[in-house]
Image (tube, rainbow, N blue to C red; front, side):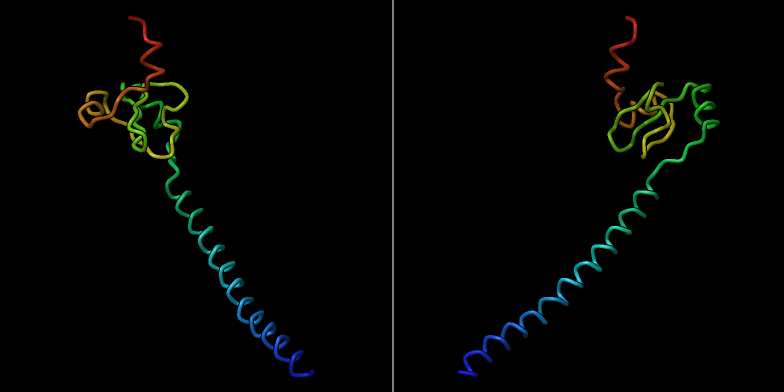
Length: 109
């Protein structure tokens, strides 16, 4: 009778000891991955100053969102996207970027 009780109890104990470290290891890995992702995000964030934006607008440059392939002549996204750079409109077109559709619609014909 004692053997019937002892075997399932020891089996349950062995399984619980094997499972607990596996879950603890996954939690540690997820914390590392989260911090790595936040480092990548902060590194990819664009830090263009207001003075740089004003100078580029004065020179007639467009802001190219290199992630989406869209360029902006002004407005909400000019110099504000996470990935981008300033260039002339001709350079942007030659590189294969296209004008923001909303900005193109609002232009007078």
